[in-house]
Image (cartoon, rainbow, N blue to C red; front, side, top):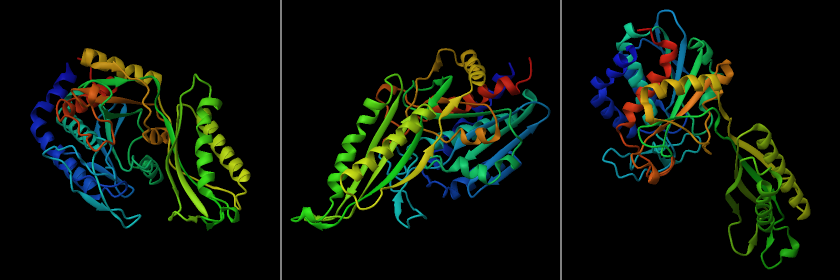
Length: 409
């Protein structure tokens, strides 16, 4: 079969891909600052003979393989790292790697603790195999190397910077993410909702400063904040239907600088998750209502401020596209093709296909042989097994694209 000819080309590049993975793993970069990463990707695309490479925004790239008549398939790989230190202990670890955040001017550790380096190598491997076996398929394959997934800014940045003019509009848009929640070497699909809708909220509440020994002369935002945090816990338990899935987390609360000073403001950071827009809207309405009501009850001298950021859309896989890819996975991978459960993490993957009006599906890639004790994404210990993960990641891309691109036997 033609698909086996394409996949077998990966055997000839395995060692090189493994070494290249280590290079990318050691050079993680912050969101929208992936300059070295983008340059290295461009260098590799040139090496493997992909001639139509377009920059989109500061660090985004599209790589277009045109191979005669046929459908257009696009595949996305995100490329940014995380502002955290790696503690995996791997000999190719990025321990000690730092980068100055251009937004804050602060030097911070950086690590590929979400596996985006796996995504880069998987897509590069698939592009190289497809380019080397052009007699086995027909159509157009587009690699989309997207920045800044970790801040929910990268996909929107590519849309705003004209990705629609930097690639042919695809018939289908594909994506994958390496995870520890499914068996190593497996691929997992799911119809409908897969990753949750999410938003972070910075809330500033206001009090009236005073001496700690004279609280009656002030309005204490610390006590006010404590009341708000407690009351917020009732949203999911008492306002959201039990059949729905929703999360409200207060991840940070900062108030004051000294034990005997009542401050004049406090700030809290919240995160919400839901699997449909109505529930998400209900969470945000309830949060603002509760905060405003508690502020009024506490005699707050000023209305609270709400700032929404890191807003992620729902990843809602198209049924028909998902069924097509799942059938291809079942036929090629057998028992290693599994059905995914809902994943409470979030993705900005769907921003581009939604903007282009293109159906999409996104699947999981198992990255750990012992998935039952695997570290989660964003753990400092997250470092997937190199193999079979890199091979399976590239194979999955080729197999997923095959229903649209493969020639008949």
